[in-house]
Every structure is written in C-alpha cells, then in structure tokens.
Amino acid sequence: MTAKPLPGQPHFAYRGEELYVEDLRLDDLARQHGTPLFVYSKAAMLAALAAYQRGFAGRRAQICYAMKANSSLAVLQVFARAGCGFDIVSGGELERVLAAGGDVAKVIFSGVGKTRAEMRRALDAGIGCFNVESEAELEVLNEVALAAGRRAPVSIRVNPNVDAKTHPYISTGLKGNKFGIAHERTLATYQRAAALPGLQVVGIDCHIGSQITQEAPYLDAMDRVLDLVQAIEAAGIPLHHIDFGGGLGIDYNGDTPPPADALWAKLLAKLDARGYGQRQLMIEPGRSLVGNAGVCLTEVLYLKPGEQKNFCIVDAAMNDLPRPAMYEAYHQIVPLAPRAGKAGLWDVVGPVCESGDWLGRDRALHVQPGDRLAVLSAGAYCMSMASNYNTRGRAAEILVDGDQAHLIRRRETPADTFQLEKLL
Ligand code: LLP
Image (cartoon, helix red, strand yellow):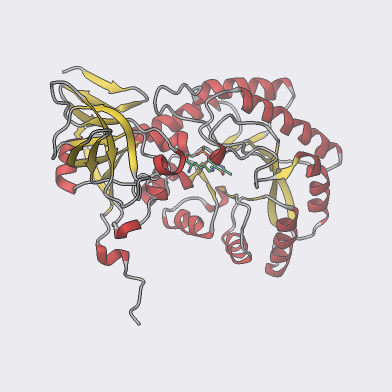
C-alpha cells in the first residue's frame, strides 16, 4: 500500500484510509491510551537533528536543544544520546537535564530573570555557559560565583535590533523587547565582565525570535554580531564561541522556512567570508527539532451546528494546546480515518469554559461524534505549555520508535492535579 506522507510531517502518513506514525496506526494508540494523547516520532526528531548535523559537517559546532519547546524527559534523552547539549531557562529545566542523563557541561543557561539560587545550583552542577541578559545580572552572577569560590563562564546576549518578521509575542531581537543587551552597550558590558574576578568571558550570544521563516533576519543578525566580535576582540577580550540562538520555523500550514542545512550553508559562507568559519559555534534550536515530530490525538464529543457557526466539540482544549488561544496560531486538524462524503465547515473547539478555547476555525471536515482527529505540528510548545485549567489532567504522551510505542508520561488523574493542596 502506498503511503501518503503529511506535508511537513513525513513520519506521519496515510496508508489506505488510516493515519500512521512510523509503523503504528494512530487510532490503535488512541484506543489503547485514550485521548487527548500526544504522540511523537523519534525518527522525526532525529531527522530534524540530522539536518543541522549535515549543515555543520566538518565544523566545530554544538547543538543545544532549547528544551522549553518540549521538556519531557524521554525527549531530552533522545537528544542527549544523539550528542546534544541543552539551552535551559530555569533551575527546573536544569534538574530535568540531570534527571534525563544529559551532559551538564553542554548546558547553557538563558533568560532575563535568573535568581541567585538558580545561578548557584548551575555553578555547582558545572554548566557550560551563562547567557547573561543585563548589566545588573552580570554583577549578581559575579557575586554568586565569588561566594561559591568559582568563576562563572559567561556569554553576553546581545540584542541586534533586527526584525525577525514573526509574531510580536515571539520576536525577541528588537530594541523594544526585554531580551539581551543593546548593541551600543555591548562592548562596555564586555569590558566590565572581563574586569570582574568571578566571571570568565567565553562567548557571545544572540537569539532574535521564533518561527522565523526567512533567511534575511539571520544573515543580518550574524553581520551585527560579527561586528561586535571584532570590536570586543580588538579590545583584548577573546571569545571562544559564538552562539546564534534558535528560532528556525517549521511548516504549520504551507510555511516555507529554509531547511536547516540550507540555512547554515548560507550562514557558514558568511562566517567564512568574514574569517570566523573555524570558530566554535553554538545554536539553540527548539521548535525545529520537535514541532513536526508530534501530533495531538483527540476525539469528537459533540457536533453543534448553528446559524452562524458550526461547532465540533472535541476532548482536547486550550489547556492541552494553548497556541491558538495565545497567538491565534494555526495547527492543521485532520481525521485519523477520513470519511467519504461532503465536508462541512466547523470550528473545532474544546470543553474549556472560554470563548478563546478553540483549536481551529472554519475547518473543512466530515466528522461524526466518536471520530478521532489529529492536531498536527504539536510537538513543540504544546505539552510544555499545557496547564490544568478547569482541573483537566494533562494528556498522556507516547514516543514511537518504529513499531514500538513507549508511554513516556501517563495521563494525569484529578488526584494528581490537587495533590499539592491542603484543606484548611
Ligand atoms: N533560545 C532562546 C534564548 C529562546 O528564548 C528560545 C525561544 C529558543 C532558543 C528556541 O527558539 P525556537 O528554536 O524554538 O524558535 N511559545 C511560543 C514560542 C516561544 C519561544 C521562546 N523562546 C510558541 O508557541 O510559538
């Protein structure tokens, strides 16, 4: 039987009239484990990683998976075993790296609001680099390191003031964003860092946004960062590595981001031309490694046709899939077993008591109660942003490897959701 892979998600394919992930039928997984259910393809994650690895062949480069995209322990394990480091943004994420057996020396710690306790724990664990985001943070990190009798390895995150041309909530490299140190302040900040005894300057860092689908913002940011590298090194401060952050987009609905290897061929050509091609490089991709490696399965509960709108009420909701409600993000929604016949237009909505609880609007679907659907491109920023709103237990997660399905997180029970609470 010829398989028809889904555009953007080739590890998910229709065989005949049924949707498969690798060698398993998704409907079987939904039946066994219930819905809503996140299902990930290990092969899809490794294929996404391989595109970066091909791009960096023959170079000195460290890929640090930005685990905020999907921080489930087994997902971290897949990337740790493949040689990745991790970009973390909290003490909690550091503990996850340790629990998953990741190499702590390959951890970089980003974020504008690191606490003293988080800095101390990361220093004691021996992380590879702190990406410092403000002059005030630099002073505090110096104090914490001196008190611990250590020198903290630091990069400074520069804000290159380039427009990543993405949603305003996920654009981070513009002057008006809270992230990084302004281009103009960078050299002075490096001079201060080099003078502080508790710090060891090791690199420079930038990250301009997320779901970037064009090359130009990356090329512009690289030029701006290399100008700074030149100025900082001319001032006598050597930089061991250059970190270009993450941000590469994925195909949600006909989006056409450059493939990672093609993007890096262009970026490396620029690095070569400017004489930095042999420098140690780091990147922090999140979404592009996991986004299209996952789907969320859900069951149709009720159909509610109306005068103005037809609602298809499913058992997944904004607490499981927050991106439509938060960013009006588009996720494709497809049936696990398409029915013959004429499709209607449905707003696919969840059971949560908010009008903002929608997963897709005006979708052409031919569905009946009891049918199962897959919300696509759900591997990144879905489970990691899921909540217990409306006291809904978070979904279970399955990682598929060929014809093997591993339950990597069981479904939360109501008791799980209130286990930390106490009656008066
Ligand atoms: N490095 C830093 C410092 C970041 O802030 C981020 C993402 C990344 C790396 C990874 O970026 P990626 O490769 O995943 O684009 N919740 C939003 C996305 C927020 C991204 C935040 N920072 C969404 O669902 O679209």
